Image (cartoon, rainbow, N blue to C red):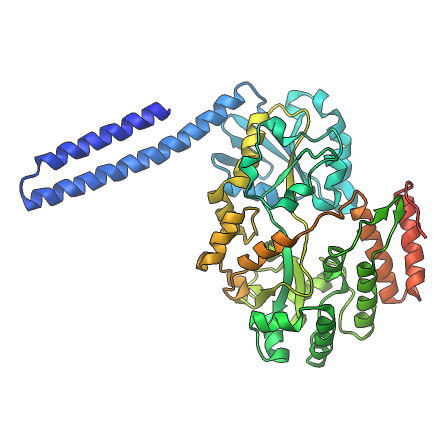
Length: 477
């Protein structure tokens, strides 16, 4: 295909040269130049078409000796939309089926509610190598909270075994790699997201209370937890609730001094204890609410009448959680701003893993590389999906001009801050116990905030009981 492309380009150049040599008058020269320009444009179009054809041919050739069905396991449609919108050559058939060349893509979506998604993975991945060709799982997705569970097992492939090299992922943030390294240091997944996060503030509330919605001034007012708590009192006086107690949890929990389990014992870090103390104080004063994340009451803050000052979240929060497509929302009016807040942190992100036993390794490799390393696709994802992509060069480019401005943030450009935050993410304290400990601690403390438990120690006892039932191999105080 490359030889054909070169031949086409050479032929186009020769035609342009002949036409230029025939012109003898100024009018003829202009006509010749126009003809030459037209020919060169046609050659460029031919080149682009040939490149697309060659890429499709390469994929088809690779898949000729591989499986004819690509099975992808995920918990929602986020990754599906990234493939549908950005992967070259993908053709949508229906909501659960697509085509890449002559390979049928099947989307298996199991929601995370009640741990259903992980239960599904746990039932199918161990026997994947012996599954029939059309039933083999090829790709599956993971979140940071439980990634180590799969990374430290045989159900995930080393990406090096797919032929992916360190040079190809050199522009990705180190923390996104650390999350999916196994105990031997093998990298077993890739992410298109760098989910550094910040404080998303209601610009009107900032004007009402601070007299300005300027990001620098707002950041100064929330730059540590003492200032944040002081602002909460002022917000209440103006009729605003600061946020939900659960909105701030990950900011505290990402800034701990050690992992949840140390030498087989559960340790509640001082910063997590501080979250409980601060949240109890603010909730008792009515300056924060105790609504569950994603609940209807919690979601009211997306609208002006909700009278909520802020949410905490990464860039994916913009696209999935602020109702920007609802004309009555704050986001639709460009009414949010973005600052770092009291402490740098990250929240979430999605990792693509190759399932051991896949019979489509070439296509799996191509999807992983294109969706997580291709600069053009990375920029498309950032601009179309308001996402913070896992590519340092692309984020620098987005931060340098108006191409990174987001309408829902009043045309503020958040990418310099997001890139700086991604560089600060420290994953040294991640462990296999994070999901269970974080969930059970928040559940127990909600009882404390709402008054079901009279004291912190009562709530802590409930947490200890729940966590030892979940993880029999650990002890508590």
